[in-house]
Structures are given as C-alpha cells and as structure tokens.
Image: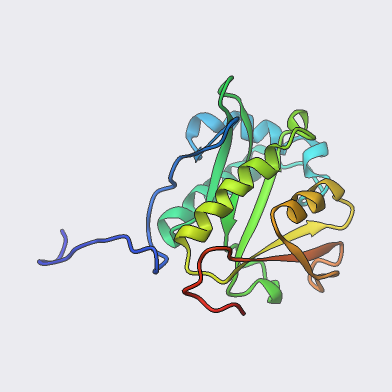
Length: 198
C-alpha cells in the first residue's frame, strides 16, 4: 500500500527505478532481456570464443543464469541496465550489453556508469556492436545524469577497442591495476550539458 499522496514520477535528471525501454536501429531491436532469451544467452556465454576476452573462461549454466538476472536486475534498482540485442529480420538473439554499475572493486570505475557489450561470434565483423551501443549511448545521453561513461576492454580485444573508438571512447588508463590485462576507456556525455565533466 502506497502512503497517501505518494506519487512516483520518472525524472530524467535523477537516476531511479524504471523498466528497460525498447530501442530500434536499422537492423536491431534493443530490448529488455526476456526469459525467452536465456537459452541463446547461455549458449553464447558457454562459447570459449566469446569469453576469451571477457572473463577468460566459458560460463556454466548457473553462472550464466546469475549474470543474466544481474543484467536485468539493474533496471529497477538503478534506472539503467543491460538489454538483449535482437536481429530485426530473424528475431535471433545476437548478444547483450548496455550500462551497469557492477561494484567490481575497480577504483577507476567507482561512481561511474560502465558500458559493456558482447555478441555471439557468428555476428562479429558486421557492425552490430557499434550499431547497438550507439543507440544505447544516445539513450544514456538523453536520460542519465552522468558526465561520462567508462568501459573496460582487454588489450588483445582489438575489435572491441575499435568499437570503443567509433563510439567516442578514448583510453583513460592503459592498464587497470585491478585488471592488468585491460585498459580503461572513457566517453564524455554528448548532450547532457546540465552535468559538469569530471
């Protein structure tokens, strides 16, 4: 029961609870993760090719389930989170990603929104990551009160480094002390001028 006079209102200048909006691009539907995505998600994260630069080892079913729920669970708590990336023509699950605050224990991420993306290997090299994350970042610029967004990219993941550059990220730290095989990237908010850059 809500207290008398209680009103819940989404204000774009305050991060708060909400559901993932559905976004579209020419080739993709960027939507909330759904239970129907889980088997494709689980198969993707069990693939050593996908996890080579993200975690370094394939995930078992239980670890995938926990991560899947974590991505979806960010939305009601933070007002941003992870989406599923779906092929508009076929309806196939191509990957997932979005915005997070995972509390990784990485000092350079504290207080910052973190961007992340992962795609099934069969979809690599087709521009999907850039297309999906460009629309995610456009949404973030319009709705999140943050001056910048950061990302972690493994040094050997040249494809994701190129995606980060195309999205407007620049290398902030060549080596993250807590994750020495990765660099930290940052991207200033494009249109959210109400907040000062850090």
